[in-house]
Image (cartoon, rainbow, N blue to C red; front, side, top):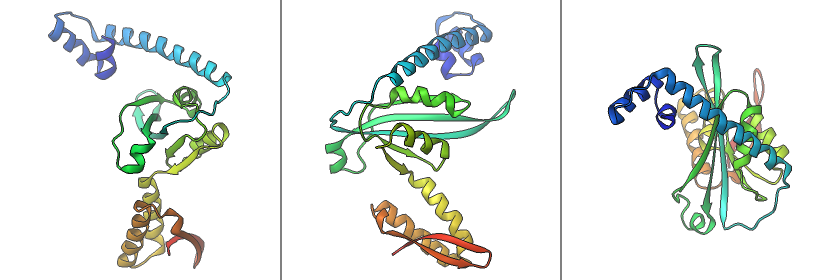
Length: 220
């Protein structure tokens, strides 16, 4: 019941139970049981989070790269209108395989999600982050993410993901270049440098603009 209640609308879960097992359970009962078990699991996660924060971070030698991805998405709720669902994903990749193939397949991942403030999800995510010296965080430019990473994982590798980086580049190019061809050429250059591991070759220069100064990343 809990599995169906967590994977379907409660009404659909009720109908599926009836079809598969011939057991008639109302949608409301599926909701009650699912939320009750969910609360128990959440309480256990909070307890683990508290204990985890009390333990010092140990520097372990690892044969894997350990990644943490974080992001959020807005959804419209009936009770509180627009709220952000925050999601964290933790996974690892063998270093040997990653060096041999940059597009190595990701095996298992662990996820944590929360509908609400970052103060609620971050302790739960912290439980899943491996105790290594250099975890690799991949995220957008949200201040709440990088502030937390800097405070709790000062030696972590911080990566702005490709799609958000290109999104920022597109936003700038639309303002900086009046000619579409120039705009497309510049965007293409930025994308090429990012995808061919030449981030260090993107130099920062300043250009003048009638309405002020803009900082411009430009492929050398």
